[in-house]
Image (tube, rainbow, N blue to C red; front, side, top):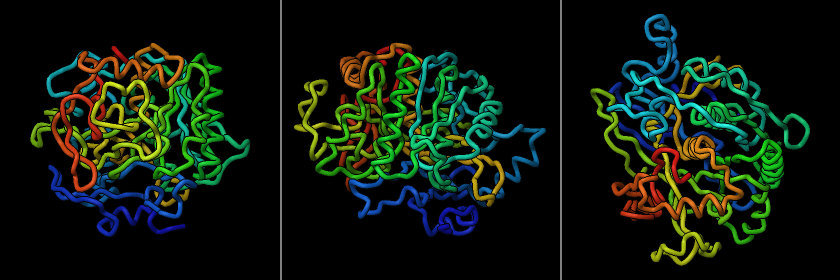
Length: 420
């Protein structure tokens, strides 16, 4: 097993893998890309990578979780004083799924979104043996209803495990889909590998399960660089009454399947908070979000009003993704290198299942992704989305967030449940 996947790496040599470094209220922190998210050119068109990053706090996770464990009676675990990272309630507040409060402070605001119905399927690779236990612990910690999760093996047999890689992706996906739509039925559909061939078999299974539940959403928090035959996979996004979502990626440029015209592509934003009070200040484009104009996919009819692009432009929408303003995630690795613990995770892998949950919560249950996208683009300027007009992304941060659609944040981030 690669040492990149070991907890000791995140604690002791995170600087080797760091793709960024900032000074935060608790001291210097580092952002780490797991091995499952590393770009491997030889995988192009063949295998997908995860779209999440891990924020390593000052002193590492061993110190953070020991501090949390030592103060459970005082703080009860996250949200945790001194750490202004997002909870289900704080994100629901920012995106107005609940009556908003000034600051949407993750350490004081405790009103979770309520509702959701039918089904959401999260499609991932490899097996995550602690999915049920970690999701239950996450729900209990943040006061969410008990989850209704079924784990499905797309091939019919249990896949191999992927500690510190796809497993943490799965934890992020199921926990934050549940956070946004707590009453939705969840399916975690596990492919036997991260090959596109296996993942699209899992998508077929996910679509069938969601359709049988009366409709809902399928979220895919992974992808790979565009390739000339990508459109041949679009037939996998056709289950009746199912809307498909994918993350745009955590580096400049376009990725498949997010760039498909049959998928709602979800990019990333940064949530800015007051470093002293942790109160929410504003939302801007995340510098590392994926986005741009497709090389191979023609411009779909729902983007006809965007005159600045000749082909399919992505993302369509954007949501919180920056790991520096990341989310609490409960995760237990299968290799026994650590016990159940709390981590701070971001990336567009956080944005896709969260937005799928918001759409589920809205309760419209469109017949297809195209119907959902037509509604999204028809709502530009309606107030149903927060138009992000600050920040940059793209190659050499060459694109800017502007009024209307842009290749950093699409039409903007979500506001409430109207127009979803």
